[in-house]
Image 1 (cartoon, rainbow, N blue to C red):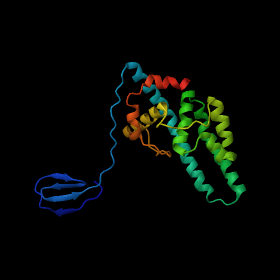
Image 2: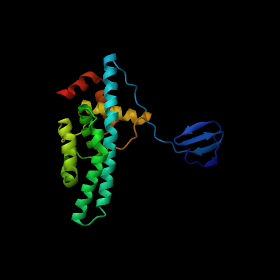
Image 3: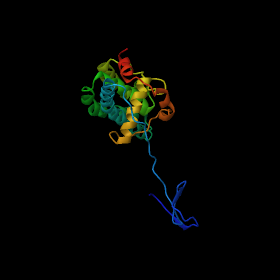
Image 4: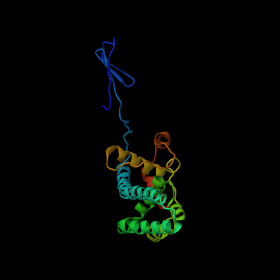
Length: 218
């Protein structure tokens, strides 16, 4: 209960009207936190369940780095906004690049190719820019990091985008993220892309998890 006010009412029975709880003639105004209720995922086979939780683990391993990259990007933009000199901006961006390399590189080397693919997708989700777009936007500071570390390591396209509304595998990632945010296994960071999970979920109610995950190899 975040706030309340009490006033006399003629209603004698306990009831709820919008955000008002009426208890024996008194009304209490309350403000409730939003609660997300997801349908239980019904697995058709044990194999599908195994595939789903294998991918669940991959998403959990990749997401924190995409989240951290977005935080660092916001931090960098805020700092660059205070620097007028082009030379000093370039110098500061390179300094951030070095910081990112020290923070990420060893951990990224331990990631699998699947986790690398998910990471590139989630970078788009969390920043609104593809990894390629990040390189283009922050060429002086990010080029070496993303090309030399991410692309070379995973042999993947940095232009990959995140589209849960049209790509089944991306929807599966989004489903995993939302369930993880709900149960607290991952800390939510709002997506920078315009999509609504609940609007697109009915489209994938009969999703074949095994087929979708195996499609990543094609």
